[in-house]
Image (cartoon, rainbow over the protein chains, first blue to last red):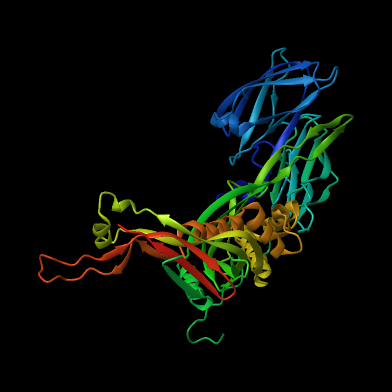
Length: 228
Length: 310
């Protein structure tokens, strides 16, 4: 009996759009053009790819698994085609199918548009997370100095007799802050951030639970000869 | 007119039958794929109970002979569906979904996971059938080139063997112990606990939410309805063909492999003896037995034969 368990998913308690991992991804709309991309893991470039985005397609998104490009196991995935419906954009979705975290992507267009960096999401992007560890996640945007600009509350999933596939639990608009600022979803459902301002990055951090906090009981020391 | 007649009472024939029955043993293993699960078994079969009755129509009736399946190990392989998160639609479009979240596998089985079920001694089938008693002549291959007396001395004489050749046969599944329902239920529950036990509680709940009740899912995959005994009977008997196969082995055993009764041909009327001097022994008196026949009535099985000459 061999079981596959995504251990990274079990332990993920921080989500950073600037460092993609197993449970988050970024959807970015592309206009017709030819693009070349670089996949970075931390400060090391680990792979490249190209995308031909041209009109005359179905507008279906293209998913790019950054971990496959990074470990060289990708089959014919270094080149992607994106067929756009006329005069629209279509999405390329950067995600990580493996255990590693810390990916970002740089995308340059042949026509010389300003390079796109997933660490600074743009208007029209979506940051998609599927937290599974229940608890209270502090939401911060653009590295603000506050402890949190919003709260994402992930409830423990309720076992049911009938199967319930993962659903889109909440859509949150990000424009400086978060709208709504407090969101409830169930473990395994998605929290999707719609980026409505340029150069946005998002961070979600799970607050330690009371059970996980270190005990801070006062220490009583008894000195010989003194009454307690 | 036969030279010799030998009659066996039903009681004596039953003692011979019991010896024959107790010598039987068979083992077999097989497997199959049925939709989304596999099943494999290894079985050993023994015979118990049963008796024979002489019939006025000249046949022998084997009554209520039990086939006990012990050991009987059934192993069921199940593909546990992957638990995936994501995959939900973010921007619906006129012809489907314009933007969808990527799917991530959280938990899955690869390859099949196994559910072993020990059914040893729990399942019993019963056969009854009418048999024709037939003599067949066995030419002993070890006797080639030997005189009848040399073959007799070497224990390699030919034989006349009386077999019971089944005509019609009834097979009944007489028993799958009632406890098998609880047994399978408990095994499935224990299996699910083992499968998910190492996960933290919230992760187990997540698996249960996405797949639904895993115990129910396994029952659905296996197509277990309300009656586990009926399901098991169909799986072993119909899908895997276990009962038919073992019954064929039993029939083959009675019809061709092991005779109820046998005697050597030529038959020693007088054994070899010491002669007047060691160099002149008295050889055995051997008489060839010519085409023995069997007749059966309510009371006895009579064998008649004529002797030939060497």
